[in-house]
Image: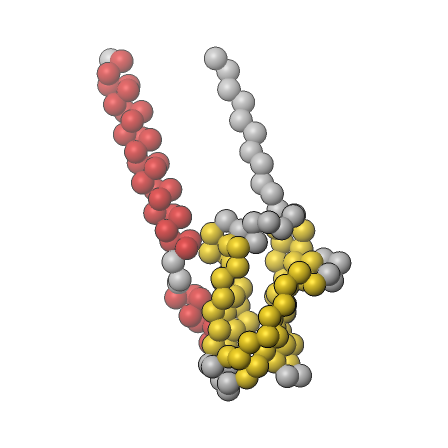
Length: 130
Protein backbone atom coordinates (compact mmCIF):
# COMPACT_ATOMS: atom_id res chain seq x y z
CA UNK A 1 0.00 0.00 0.00
CA UNK A 2 2.87 2.37 0.85
CA UNK A 3 4.52 1.65 -2.55
CA UNK A 4 1.27 2.42 -4.39
CA UNK A 5 0.95 5.74 -2.53
CA UNK A 6 4.57 6.64 -3.40
CA UNK A 7 4.04 5.76 -7.07
CA UNK A 8 0.85 7.79 -7.20
CA UNK A 9 2.59 10.78 -5.61
CA UNK A 10 5.48 10.57 -8.10
CA UNK A 11 3.07 10.30 -11.05
CA UNK A 12 1.13 13.36 -9.92
CA UNK A 13 4.38 15.33 -9.42
CA UNK A 14 5.61 14.33 -12.89
CA UNK A 15 2.31 15.40 -14.42
CA UNK A 16 2.43 18.78 -12.63
CA UNK A 17 6.05 19.32 -13.70
CA UNK A 18 5.29 18.57 -17.36
CA UNK A 19 2.26 20.91 -17.24
CA UNK A 20 4.28 23.78 -15.72
CA UNK A 21 6.99 23.34 -18.38
CA UNK A 22 4.41 23.56 -21.15
CA UNK A 23 2.90 26.70 -19.65
CA UNK A 24 6.24 28.50 -19.35
CA UNK A 25 7.13 27.67 -22.96
CA UNK A 26 3.79 28.96 -24.16
CA UNK A 27 4.33 32.26 -22.35
CA UNK A 28 7.72 32.91 -23.93
CA UNK A 29 6.84 31.93 -27.49
CA UNK A 30 5.43 34.61 -29.83
CA UNK A 31 1.72 34.15 -30.32
CA UNK A 32 -0.74 34.88 -33.12
CA UNK A 33 -2.16 37.63 -30.91
CA UNK A 34 1.24 39.38 -30.93
CA UNK A 35 1.21 39.43 -34.75
CA UNK A 36 -2.33 40.78 -34.86
CA UNK A 37 -1.56 43.47 -32.30
CA UNK A 38 1.53 44.52 -34.22
CA UNK A 39 -0.67 45.24 -37.24
CA UNK A 40 -3.00 47.55 -35.27
CA UNK A 41 -0.64 49.38 -32.93
CA UNK A 42 2.70 50.98 -33.62
CA UNK A 43 4.04 50.28 -30.10
CA UNK A 44 3.57 46.97 -28.34
CA UNK A 45 5.26 45.83 -25.13
CA UNK A 46 4.82 42.25 -23.89
CA UNK A 47 6.30 40.43 -20.94
CA UNK A 48 8.16 37.36 -22.27
CA UNK A 49 9.50 35.99 -18.99
CA UNK A 50 9.65 37.13 -15.41
CA UNK A 51 10.88 40.76 -15.55
CA UNK A 52 11.83 40.45 -19.24
CA UNK A 53 9.98 42.44 -21.88
CA UNK A 54 9.85 42.58 -25.67
CA UNK A 55 9.20 45.98 -27.23
CA UNK A 56 7.97 45.98 -30.82
CA UNK A 57 7.61 49.19 -32.80
CA UNK A 58 6.17 49.23 -36.32
CA UNK A 59 6.93 52.12 -38.66
CA UNK A 60 5.83 51.84 -42.31
CA UNK A 61 8.51 54.34 -43.32
CA UNK A 62 12.13 54.29 -42.26
CA UNK A 63 12.58 56.83 -39.52
CA UNK A 64 14.76 57.79 -36.60
CA UNK A 65 13.05 57.13 -33.30
CA UNK A 66 13.82 57.99 -29.70
CA UNK A 67 13.11 55.18 -27.24
CA UNK A 68 12.83 55.99 -23.53
CA UNK A 69 11.83 54.37 -20.25
CA UNK A 70 10.49 56.49 -17.38
CA UNK A 71 9.56 55.69 -13.79
CA UNK A 72 6.36 56.90 -12.09
CA UNK A 73 8.07 60.21 -11.14
CA UNK A 74 8.96 60.90 -14.80
CA UNK A 75 12.65 60.20 -14.12
CA UNK A 76 14.40 59.09 -17.31
CA UNK A 77 15.87 55.61 -16.81
CA UNK A 78 16.86 54.71 -20.38
CA UNK A 79 17.16 56.49 -23.72
CA UNK A 80 18.27 55.41 -27.17
CA UNK A 81 18.10 57.01 -30.63
CA UNK A 82 17.80 54.54 -33.46
CA UNK A 83 16.99 54.31 -37.15
CA UNK A 84 14.12 51.91 -37.85
CA UNK A 85 13.50 50.11 -41.13
CA UNK A 86 9.86 48.91 -41.01
CA UNK A 87 9.96 47.58 -37.43
CA UNK A 88 12.07 47.35 -34.30
CA UNK A 89 12.14 44.46 -31.85
CA UNK A 90 14.13 45.05 -28.67
CA UNK A 91 14.35 42.98 -25.49
CA UNK A 92 14.74 44.43 -22.01
CA UNK A 93 15.70 42.74 -18.74
CA UNK A 94 14.14 44.95 -16.07
CA UNK A 95 14.86 42.73 -13.07
CA UNK A 96 16.94 45.51 -11.50
CA UNK A 97 13.92 47.84 -11.19
CA UNK A 98 11.99 48.24 -7.94
CA UNK A 99 8.22 47.79 -7.68
CA UNK A 100 6.31 50.62 -9.32
CA UNK A 101 4.80 51.93 -12.54
CA UNK A 102 7.05 52.46 -15.55
CA UNK A 103 6.45 53.75 -19.08
CA UNK A 104 7.98 52.85 -22.42
CA UNK A 105 7.89 55.84 -24.75
CA UNK A 106 8.72 55.99 -28.46
CA UNK A 107 8.92 59.33 -30.24
CA UNK A 108 8.99 59.41 -34.04
CA UNK A 109 9.07 63.02 -35.22
CA UNK A 110 5.93 64.67 -33.81
CA UNK A 111 4.30 61.29 -33.00
CA UNK A 112 4.51 60.03 -29.43
CA UNK A 113 3.55 56.49 -28.40
CA UNK A 114 3.48 55.31 -24.77
CA UNK A 115 2.77 52.08 -22.94
CA UNK A 116 2.85 51.84 -19.14
CA UNK A 117 3.34 48.73 -17.03
CA UNK A 118 3.55 47.83 -13.36
CA UNK A 119 6.18 45.81 -11.56
CA UNK A 120 4.78 44.11 -8.48
CA UNK A 121 6.66 41.65 -6.30
CA UNK A 122 4.52 38.64 -5.53
CA UNK A 123 5.16 36.73 -2.35
CA UNK A 124 3.67 33.44 -1.37
CA UNK A 125 3.22 32.16 2.13
CA UNK A 126 2.98 28.47 2.86
CA UNK A 127 1.95 26.89 6.13
CA UNK A 128 2.78 23.29 6.84
CA UNK A 129 2.05 21.15 9.84
CA UNK A 130 4.05 18.09 10.67
